[in-house]
Amino acid sequence: MDINKKKELEIFATQIRMGIIESTYNAKAGHPGGSLSSADVFAYLYGKEMRYKADDPKWEGRDRFVLSKGHCAPGLYSALAYKGFFPVEDLKTLRHIGSYLQGHPNMNTVPGVDMSTGSLGQGVSVAAGMAKAAKFMNSDVNVYALLGDGEIEEGQVWEAFMFAAQYNLDNLCAIIDSNGLQIDGSCEEVMSAEPIDKKLEAFGFEVKVINGNNFDELDSAFDAFHKTEGKPFAIIMKTVKGLGVSYMENQVGWHGKAPNEEEYNIAMKELSEKLKELEA
Image (cartoon, rainbow, N blue to C red):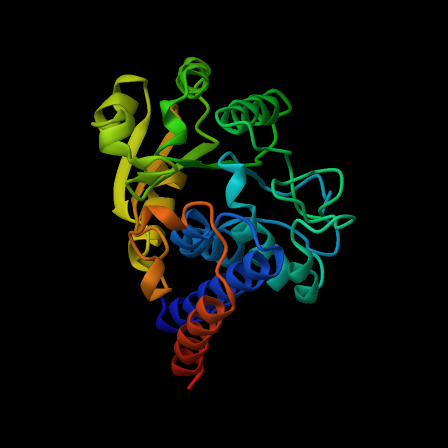
């Protein structure tokens, strides 16, 4: 990847992480852990991969993104805000009464959100339907769905995968954030889905396993997606839950808990220093 583009994406990912902390702190609620682990793929999707128009969110020619793990809305909102879909300042209203930025994405109120999600498993099912519709209409639209590794314990996810393979949806890219933790503990202890790659291959997917917090590997994976024909594509991202905030990293307790004032200040100091380093 071009070094300047990589630096631009690293800056964007850091801004996204700052937005996640800002929004969950002001909400006194939310899901920072899985939002932080996904910040790099949000940055890649909205900073390099997808076609969209921030000033025309309903543009028909846009690629579609579905946040199947809808509880990680703080990460999506932050990416959308920093790309101009709505004011960054509005991130502070997350989950407030009367705010259009609620705890899970709402396509009727949030510019840039293509599907309302929150019930795990349903998002990827809709994404598969979107991809099938694009094929039916002879459109070159690509559809991206981001799932959690805890989410793929849902049976509906595998029904959607079966559908995608049946109809050769090579315009569908399923991205699994495999950070190893879910609300009740480690995925291995609660309900292991491993080997995820072999199961997806058995369901008819082309699969690439990468470090999802590395932009060179993300770039390689999405390049492989564009070169794949006749079958859906899956990227299994090995990530660190809570990445970017020292005390949140690999800590299951930060799945669905907001930082207090002291924790907020520590997190923002760490991220601000990272941003200054990147911008130097």
